[in-house]
Image: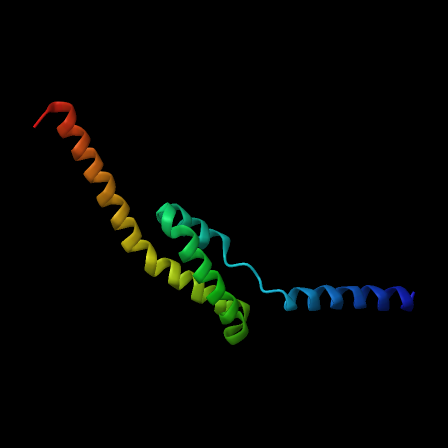
Length: 103
């Protein structure tokens, strides 16, 4: 019985060590929100840069600190991105109305 307990303990430790060697992925919800708000040409660059920095922050701050940092970066980016998206949408609505009804 002690052998089985020791083996299961070792397996748990191996899994923990494997996870700690691999950088964890950034928070899914924050990344999803950024993907929704970013333009197509900016998505890969911005998400890629944030993911690289997130991996560095994991080493510096730990998992929770890196997650907090990522959420902060995402939230600080969302207001300007949302404003930009609203402006583009309103321009296209006005432009469409002008074409439709003539100017």
